[in-house]
Length: 301
Ligand code: 13P
Ligand code: SF4
Image (cartoon, rainbow, N blue to C red):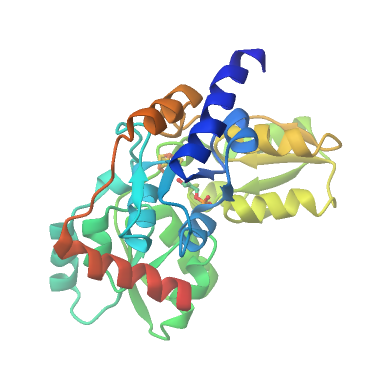
């Protein structure tokens, strides 16, 4: 912690001086998540709680699509990304033109877009969803068929849960696609008393091996419920690190994968962002109304 003390003190002072808030995703490292963040959570919480903030500056300790969503919800505020290299394999897998082509191929079928997508893709969509509400959003449309982009595995997992026919895209999360059913079976054999929680970005065959599947916030609630003393979170590594810091009575079995994009965000990068007011996130004017509408429809559903 001594390594971090100087940067933490500087960031706390800069936050005051700049009238800034820091939003941190559950996959941020503990020194960011626990020591400097003002708002913490899953993608849904970061989109919802970004609305109507008093602060003049919003720093996103997360990846680029999250900063774009915060900017869509706060067009008059300055939104800063500490690293422009913090992307996402899902957001990079599809363009607005791809969405238009899907609509042409499936006329009249609504487009449900995972928030892990660019503002230009959101602007071509009917409604957004996150892993916390995907099932509810799809069911709320009351139709037999939807196009769900860009995460193929999330879409397949939702199709299994809802019975709604889902036209998928070939996007994958590079962190969650690496888990295998065999890996989970081996960990369970070594830890017969473990509760296995899998993120719905995992392949369906991996989710089928789990006791529970949900967003990072749902995983957090599951652990906080105290019902299980030993858990295996089939997701990004910092998730277990952050929960372990506040749940010393729970044992975390750790086959995890790192997200290289989330790890671009460091205390040093956040300090630099606040010192230099960079990198400012902007959204082309013609995308703002459409992108915001898709997010607002999700929040209202
Ligand atoms: P949630 O926190 O919404 O579950 O999303 C996980 C994720 O991979 C975000 O990039
Ligand atoms: Fe994207 Fe996966 Fe990283 Fe989340 S964990 S930012 S979905 S690559």
